[in-house]
Amino acid sequence: MLDELIRKTIREMVGGSGPPVAFLIPKGDRGLLGPESIAWKVHADFISMMIGGISSLILQALHPQALAGVWDHSSFREDLKGRLGRTAFFIAATTYGSTEMANNIIEKVNHIHTKITGLDEFGKPYSATDPHLLSWVHLTETRSFMSAHEGYRNETITPKEKDQYFLEMKSLGEKMGAIDLPSTYANTENAIEAYIPELYFGERAESIIDLLENFSSKLAAKPFIKLISRAGFLNLPDWVYPMIGKAKPSYLERLAVKKSIDLIAIPIREALKDGVAAHSLRRVYG
Image (tube, rainbow, N blue to C red):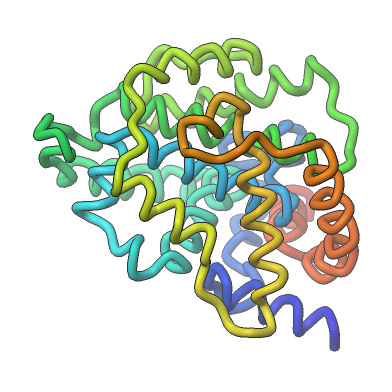
């Protein structure tokens, strides 16, 4: 009964209608990455992926042109749950889906990007097909997912495996139109920091961050969502805090949030153990 309540709460938060049966077919299809990939391991944990998702959205909101595409062409501000749900499905489909499922959703998103153009808040033209902006989105997502996995999954991942993850994700980023992507964790951090002169924390970015800090949800889910949101903010690189006008989190705050996440993660991981990753493994191995 608790398991079903947890699953219902999570579906309310990010959308979804039930067991991911679409990931069971066709039998034997390994998808774009395969079950031995580090991405299958990292992306399997709902808790750390949600935390990483929040921090990546904060980082992306700091780039005026990346934010402008969302601001002008998305219902993000009115439907945060829908945005998170669509992003979650895209990651699930490209990581765990069959080859056809993954390629179809990549093609669909790439086509949508061709229609997203305009002017940012400074009057500078932007296009969602710009490789420079696509690289920013890719870099912030992969860095955020890996950082959250290391911080909250309590699962050892070697430096070699860490670099392997960025190499695997590079192949997906290139399919989305990003170019010159790094293949290691260290180079990903360096590539992100190279964007700092382009970033701006204005009213638009502030409103997005306020939205993420005050995620609308049903009463039963509020404590969980509040904690996940806070962990997302703690998952940011240290150089971000002065930019967004927040104090660098203390060791004690980080520890308190970590302990709280560890506690709530136990029943959530148990409730979600037969999720997308498990279904996809049955597709591959029968």
